[in-house]
Amino acid sequence: EAAVTQSPRSKVAVTGGKVTLSCHQTNNHDYMYWYRQDTGHGLRLIHYSYVADSTEKGDIPDGYKASRPSQENFSLILELASLSQTAVYFCASSENRGPYEQYFGPGTRLTVL
Amino acid sequence: QQKVQQSPESLIVPEGGMASLNCTSSDRNVDYFWWYRQHSGKSPKMLMSIFSNGEKEEGRFTVHLNKASLHTSLHIRDSQPSDSALYLCAAILSSGSWQLIFGSGTQLTVMP
Image 1: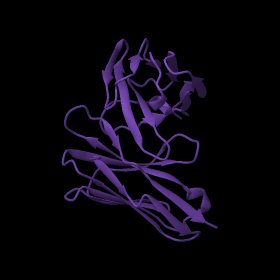
Image 2: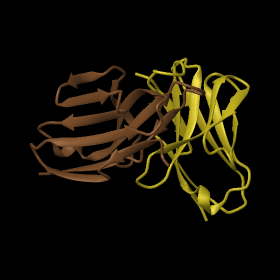
Image 3: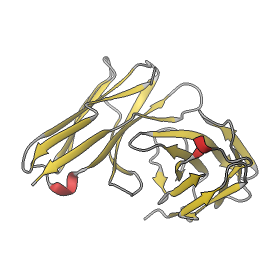
Image 4: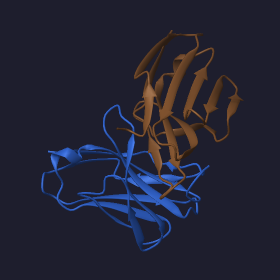
């Protein structure tokens, strides 16, 4: 089965601090994604990538940067964390774009105080 | 306006009952629909996909798709307490970036 792991699983950060969330996949997938989920709601796309060393903006990229140093790894960076970025963050991967299933990691619960 | 709308927001059904969940897109560029299930504190897992008009059945789960009205529905028969979860409808827009757009979900509770 497809394997996507995330670290840390939970984090408490202070407002204005820098936060880095990491994602690793062993699926040999080209596409990787970062989503955020607010309590009881659907997922919104922040950034995605289809090749190493390249990232693309999703629907809500403001306040977030992404980095894809290799096919397996994809990071989400919050340079100046804000209260409004408190959420659960999910990483996902897929073989290709379009009608291909996305496999999600276990999520990172981020609390910004 | 959200491009993928789900209804109802929450649904309570008795164990053994039928649960019916709805999803509609407001964007005519939608081509592919998925249903994901997310148990509390867990990640979303793909439940079923449907890309063509008609019906698709897998065990107790049936999905319908009407592309003309951009409407899909998920029906769960003989509902079990383990079916209690957030059900997310997602769609791909075939124009542009091929992003997966999620609805806000239907929270299903199956009462024993």
